[in-house]
Length: 345
Image (cartoon, rainbow, N blue to C red; front, side, top):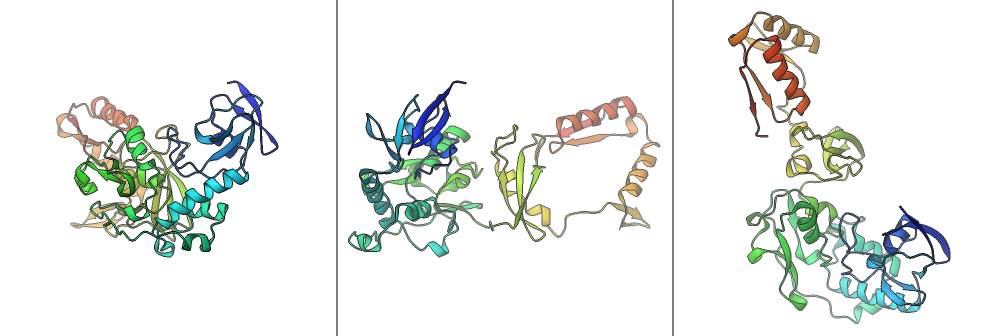
């Protein structure tokens, strides 16, 4: 791919052809405020916070401006600072500001941008703060939707359309009354939402937050065990408990995306009734055993069966290779076609 050279704030940088100015700057470690941009989605230029000045052109949004050879870019100027400040102030003044009770406190993009721009309380006092309080949609069992914290960046809308393909939400109403809504403004649980949580994972503010997620102390790379696809994920661990799951962006299988089972169905891992040790029936009751004892018992018992005395049932949670091996074992070793598969997870 062709490489281009340009200058951003006096720093010589290189970029791949087709990159936007914003992508080039962020990759080079030069911060440009942005709210509606996400690397997984097509740029739309909604928030207008990524303004830059390009020599010979003037001010433009960097997320939709492709890089060119010899381009000279400035990310800061009095005009840019004024435009950004006004845009951020209008977002904040119409935003519920009880940040300490927000699940995104400390990880909120609006907080990050406000710190970068430098918001003055005196200027905010001259603006009329919002008085409307919209109802929180708590119908979904996995996450909450709080329209009072929404900044209308559209990331959730584009995620649902471009990545998931469900198109369960979109912009609704007009002007000051604009919100992100389902068809007919019904609760999210009554929409086409698949509860995959992709919009929740990408929401830059506290408008979409998981119900029972806590910040982990560490993360462990793993593979989802719900089906045979083999999606890569990171298990967020706190003590000896899994408190969060996120997709592994570097995984070629799922590229960071997860379904509702992979993202939210992890409670079984720490369930008190989960079997963690093999059980063997002795004297009419189950007792704990080692894996060696359990496998030896299974091998001994299988040796006593042949043909139609034996039947196997495979699972959708196994990989294709594991299911193939079991059917091969059933037919070639046990000498029967008595094998079935449950495709339900």
